[in-house]
Image (cartoon, rainbow, N blue to C red; front, side, top):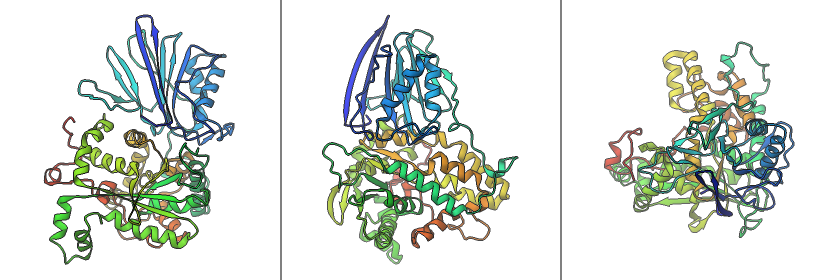
Length: 511
């Protein structure tokens, strides 16, 4: 499911159990694709599957020109010789910063070890009954087979010959410790004198790690786009695009993928409000949704500030008929997520990840296999309307509690869902705002430094520090844009009269 670069499967017998293992590889790092499942002569009883990226390690001992999966497996094998498999996995992953999911089968002990990174940025699903199934995504009919997302609060082991009860392999990693907001700490961290400079520095470091050392795929040229941005034209993604350009080969374009849905219900309403200039634009062009209009203005700003870079605004237009024909596919990739909101977000991500649209009116499909996403900025910088509402209703303590809750919920923030949707298109999302160094800095800063609801009007006080950064980069349009959820900006929500009556948490009918 993850990619088109290599595919293999194998079968094993464990006493009365039959084990089938398969892998489809999206090879983005190293000079060549590493075949999976992986084996090692020093530990022939181990079989390893890896879906992830290593952006940094505590010891700095990983060479990013190498393949991360083979390096991880070699580290595990080396440690197994001096201890047990569970501790070898825990010790190996303790110093790794990046998204991952893995499965390791110990044929000798008849045990399966598996897990996800502490933020859950990679999908891993589990079905337990007489049959045990672990998978990154499920595309077959799942009406009779219910999967659950593997919790990323710990790592796991499961005995194949036992009672089919998963047991934890507790993490021991600084990347997994709970982060607390500045206001929640008894002992305050040292004051950060230049928070704007500090934010820029950690964001640049995070972006650099995520847009460099990307393998050029077969059929892809060095001069073609290797990195794209999921681009609404809003504050979060436009800042990422602006900061990324300095680290990407100057001969390569940066593709800015913007998706718009034909929404019959919203378009009909706009046709009745032609005296409203914004509605008139939308009435004349059914794909001139809010995110399309902001994207066009923001890309013009990027082109003005960085004229030597080729910026491709990839306009992806999704007709209502096309959306209807893909609903079943989207629902199967979403599983076990199954709400109306999941569908509207999943639809936007699926067509954005496909990357097939128009650049200046000419058909174009992005060759980039790395997609930058601005997810995380709203949670860390008080970007949601409910943050302002909490402050206005109950003051600083309510705002702190709301932000701490958002921080704690990041591991269950549906990143696995998004990974299933995007990975099925042979691409990978990367989240610069979720790098540990970015999280740590923004937690160490007082909330008043990151958001100012006292002196700024609605739509401006949120993410005030990021807005200040945008202004220093010369982005006077994007810096003042209000928050808009993808399903509303792209108009993938409430596409018809029936959907308009449904709430976001309504359960979907089975596909």
